[in-house]
Length: 179
Image 1 (tube, rainbow, N blue to C red):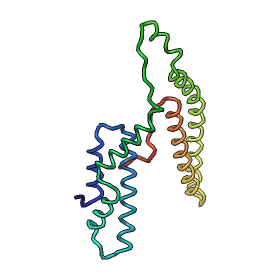
Image 2: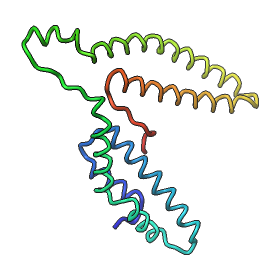
Image 3: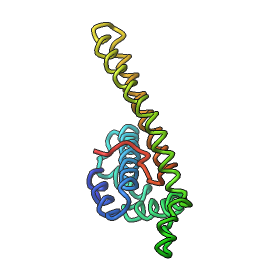
Image 4: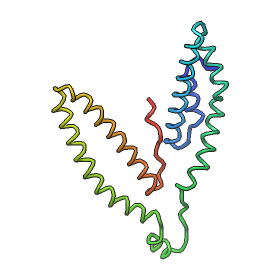
């Protein structure tokens, strides 16, 4: 069985080899968060219990890496069908002019225009935020301001990811990167 959370995550990563990288990142982040939280709760509630024994019980409840990987793949099949669109094959002229009726083309064009506007906003936001954070760092309000600025950048990144999903049909990770 698994003696540590890292071993479980390594087995889950091996089991999900070949899956979408965003799905793998989400699965690893979810598993790490769940196992860490459950392990800390189990060790706090029963201080004499060994970490390995508690982890075995938690993994039995959470599922083996094989079960977890199959569950994530099943959910991905159901949810990603809206993102993936088939490319229609036809005559040379049909394929050449088909770009005008392809919704992905119009989504990409709209994304380009939106990105031009949001790019100017992101640049302005970043320059202003960094300048004020560094300038106010000597004052007591500098540190909270810098933290709020970084949180706003994280929110803007999440918004940009949802925009990419909606207009380009590319799945973006829903969880932070797993180290």
